[in-house]
Amino acid sequence: MIFTPFLKKTNNVALFTLICLLVSNQKIHSQVGISTLNPDAMLDVVASDQRNPSNNDGILIPRVDAFPTTNPTASQHSMLVYLTTTVGANAPGFYYWDNTVTSWLPLGGSGNDDLDWYEEGTTTVPNDINDDIYTLGNVAIGKTIANNALDIVSTDGRAFQAVLSGNGAYGITSTGYLINSNSTDFSQHGLDAWVTGDGNGTQRGIRTVLNGDGTGFHVGMYASLSGNGDATIRGTNTDISNRGNGEHVGSVNLLTGIGNGRHMGTSNTLQGSGTGQHIGIQSSISGSGTGNHFGTINILNASGGGIKRGVYNTISGTGTGDLYGMHNIISNPQNNDQYGVYTFMNGAGNGTKYGVQNFINDTGSGLRYGTYNNIASFGNGTHYGAYNRVYNGSGESYGSYNDISGTGTVYGSYHSIVNFGSGDKYGVLSTISSSASGRQYAIHATALSTFDPDVYAGYFVGRVSFGDLSDRYVFPTNRGSAGQVLVTDASGVLTWQNASAIAARAVQSKLEALEEENRTLKTEIDETKDSLFRLKKRLEKLESLIEE
Image 1 (cartoon, rainbow, N blue to C red):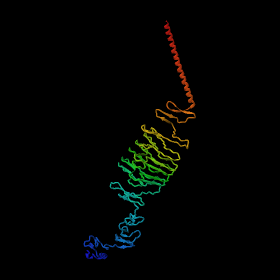
Image 2: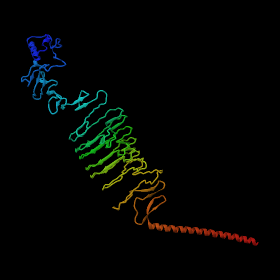
Image 3: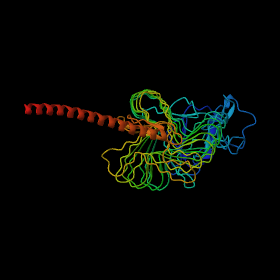
Image 4: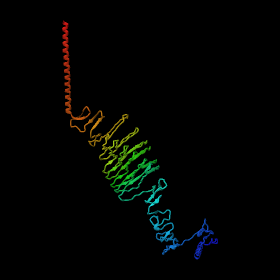
């Protein structure tokens, strides 16, 4: 059946009513067209002007203020209505009857009991692109199974990259937050980075690149730990177990900014008052490879005039536990070089440069170490508690410089050596090249305080020797009694001797010398007498010959 064009200008509502009447009174097998002579479907309704439609071009679906109190049946499966008001959790909109679940379902959704996303704080279906939404299930991107709250994987062979950008409020630009507010006593991690590939390329747990030239703080990684729980609290924990041949880097910070502000590769602030360990940075190296192993390596080659620090630690906690600016334990049994801390500085700037600077001003009662080195390796190689090589120009150069102003026991340098190896052990070894000019002090000590009688520029417990191995003096380890003096033997070994005995020995020695001299003179006199006697006999014989 075809409705001819003369109906084109007829009111659409009346036209639709006419169609319904015709359909209800007879069975129609042909296609029906409204405003068209060539319908393309069982019912084909064409607008009065497709490019410029009028305000009544369309089909009105029955409008209801509430769903029927009596549910439709299977005969009405897919029946469509428009809900004009909010009914329970159902917002206004188009709904159709789904008899398989005996429920009115909104178009574009699968029912409020089976929706995946709601507007924030409600069970309302989101209907605006700016709505804040939530879901209670896991979400997967790039995979079909979501094993975590947000499970993202790259499926095209490229490295996964998540880009977070935006300008935060109050002048703070933040690219994202990782918040762990668990208050239990178990381990808590702000961020876990697992690198488990066995390739030979560079592998980094976390890589931070800062190239801004602003004047504010430049922080590669900032960890602020203020929890007071008893469990382990880690600002950053990097566990590298890959045995590939490439670089293995727990954390690498590249700071290329030219601003005037502070530039920190890693800054850790520990304010927790708990009884557990507080560790700014802990490096555990147990790899068995033959390459170099560095807990921390710092290369400062900036040429600016500002302060350069390889590692800068400030500890001001008031707790009773141990406080370490840096604690390094190396247990690798390999024969290659092993460094607790290795600092190489070759900057040409005029500013102060510290290989390691430790500033401790806390008031707690525990031990404080500017640098604490415990070397217990039994190998035969060289072991250094601290090794400093300074190549400097005409300015002052310090292998080690300690400025201590505490009121308790103060050590400028403290060495405890318990190594059982066969090599030489030196508490302090100072070597000055013979080609050096100017004043030279292997050890220069000044102690001029008059507040206490026990003030010494040098204090030794044990044997003391001066000279070299072939020509030296060896001092005794005990002190002499009153009136005794030090006396050396032919080998340079000094002993305490009584002064009176030395004086008597000196007189006896002189007497023995005089007696020896007398014996020598007597021998000479006797020999002279014998010579004179022989001469006299010869003269007498000569005289007798002359007389004859």
